[in-house]
Length: 379
Ligand SMILES: [Zn+2]
Image (cartoon, rainbow, N blue to C red; front, side, top):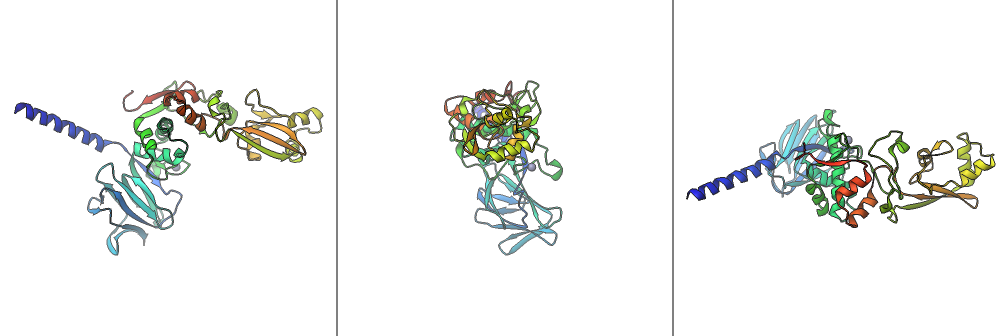
């Protein structure tokens, strides 16, 4: 009997511990539909039951309408007005709950956990905030930003750690506006909850993990689509030397979808561009150099004192990593890679994971001298 009781106590103790662990799982406030001005939304629980302001239960068959009207936030269920106040919170009964939300002028999306609705400053629109656990948020970001790039969990672990590092670095970016981060590219894209299993696994299997530099500071996890076979030094793109953003030879990017590109430009336009920048194109050798520029021995930074980043911008090129050859009355730019080339190459990372490299090996390959730290277990 005594044994049974102590066993029962132990079970209860463990159960309550697990419960409180779940309950204390830190939540973030993420502004959703941050680029949309809307004055009315319809919310329906997709899974589980919700409670509106600790009072009214909202179930799967219910359609809760929230609208900004006469300077107040009005809540209706069908035709019935529930109340009119300044803010409301829809709380989920547990962490598995998710809901769907449809603004009057935007597409329906689904989100995990809770929803807070406030009036905008001018009281004409709604400010929508998803209160969500870190890993649910990260799974959603990983799927929104890179969901189609791979089906390999290992790749999504890499993505999740990068997104978690960004999240921790910028966690108070919008704190003065009443939330942590927004769902736009200005923070991290977060267009829905994750429903792709590999994205969810990527976030949960790396829970708490971030990337730090040798001084234990969270790194800036810059990435691009394809490095073209060699990543770039940070200072060659932005003039700012960052120790962990070093150029590395990257054979993993070769042959991936964004590895190569070509563009033809008329010789006249090409040469006039440099002429307008003060280059003497009448000089034979100068002209030859402009028509036969090569980066075969590695990435260069300038062409006749003009930064390749500027040339990329002006001619709308996919990368700065290109050679130039004469091509009839044109010049042909034969380019490699897509994006700024600094930090992690996404296509190369996906390829490394498919070849059997583990997520930390990918991170250590693209970010020089960094280490992975677990915020939940490491000091
Ligand atoms: Zn933002």
